[in-house]
Amino acid sequence: FYLLAGGVGVFGNTVSLAALYMVPTIWGFSATLSLSSLLGAAGVFLYGNHVLGNVRTEMASEENLERLFSRLYVHEVAEGNEFVKALWIRVKRPLKGTLETVGIANLNRVSSRDFNALEKVINETVPSLRRDASYLTKQKSKSLQQEVDQVVDDGNWQRLNYKTA
Image (cartoon, rainbow, N blue to C red):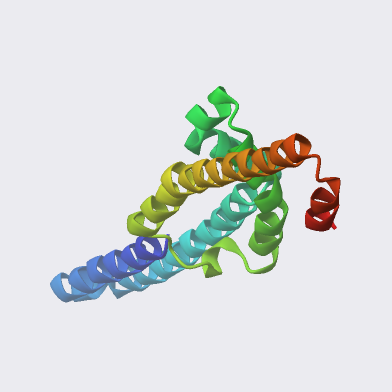
């Protein structure tokens, strides 16, 4: 809108100056055209700010955030990915608060590189860490079960109490 408003003002004044140069006797028309173009530019600027304000409010609404999340993570939502849903539930309220207090216009632009890095964390790093944690938990359970079996076989209950205490 800023570019459009500037274009209206510059174009109108350029036409006005050209008309005044070519036909100096119509200075009243040139002045009216110049004033009209400046008023038109101001009108476009004010209307544009009003529309942008409405768009910013709409973008920060909870309904729009839900739509955006559903559109960005359509596969995860369709698959019932509980991790992504839980992450969204934890992030949604602070995100909405930030958008309301800081404002969308004051947020830094997220590059595609940043977005791809976040996608990699969600789609590769977290599942890998979960697999590792699951493996370690299973190993710990096997080790503990082996120790319990050994205690039962030996009949040495004192050892089991010592280890768990």
